[in-house]
Image (tube, rainbow, N blue to C red):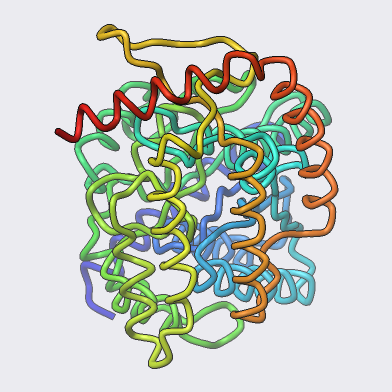
Length: 385
C-alpha cells in the first residue's frame, strides 16, 4: 500500500474513532447507495468496529430501493449488504441493515399508471420525494424517536462537484471533523468522514482494500468501468436532488426520464455481452415520447382544474385513463419479454383503485374534455409549424 494512501486511511479512521468515542451512545446511521463513496465509508467504519472490543453505539446501515433501480447496481448493493450483515453477525458487531422502499401507494408505477402522473422531468421531479426521501426519512425518524437523536454518516465529498461542495459548506458546523446539521431532519447530525478524500485516492483505496470477508471490490470497480458514471446517492433532502439527472452519467432508476439519455444503463447494457436490458431502455424512451403526445394527457389537472401558460396555451395534465391502460399493457408485455417482475401484485391492486377515481373524474368533466383536448392539439400543431 502506498504511503500516502495509508496516511489517508489512517486519517479517516482516526476521524471515525474520535466521533465514535464521543460522550453518549447516539446511534449511527450509514447511508449506503451501493456506490464507491458510501462503500468506502461502510468499509472503514466496519474496519474500525472490528478493531475495538467495546461497542458503545449501534450502527444502522440504510439503503434505499426505489423499486425501479438500475438492476446492475441494486443487485450488487444487495449482495454487498448481505455479505456485510453475515460478517457483522459472525463477529458480534452491533450493525443492522435495512433497505427502505416507497409504500405501495407511492411507487413509480402507481403514480404513473394509477394516478396518471407524467414521467418525472427537471421541472416536475415528483419522484425524488416519494421514492427516495420519504422512505428513508421515515426510517431515520423511527430511530430518532427511539433514541432521541441520530448521527448520519454520508459519503459526500467536496470534489464530487461544485454543487456538492457548496451544499456541504452551507451546513458545516465543524470544518475539521466535517460535521453539519441536517437541513430538514430534527435531532440529526451529519458526519462526512471521507469529505476531503480525492476521487483518485478513493479509487486507489477501493482497488487495494479487501472486503471484510476477504474478497476484493472488483465487481464495483467493473461496474463503474462499464457505466463510465457515478451512483445516484441516498437522498435525504431536496437540496441533494441535483445529484440525480445531471449531465454526467449516473446510476439511478432504469426508467428515469429526468435525463435525456441514460448513459450509465446504456453503458452497462452494452458491456453485458447480451444487451439484456435493451428492452428496458427502449421502454423508457417510448414512455418519454408517449407522455409528450397531448392526446395522451387530460387538459386539466388531477383536481379537475384547467391550467394555462402565459401565452394562453393549456398545460397538459395527467395521463388519460386509456393512456394509463396502454402503459400498463406495455409494462406487462415487458415483463413477459424479459422474464422480470417489474410491477407487484399489490401495485396492480392500487392502480386499479386509482383507475376508478380517474374514471369518475373523467365523467364529471366529460363536457369540457373534448373542447380542451381539441384546443391542445391545435396549439401543438401550430407550434410545430
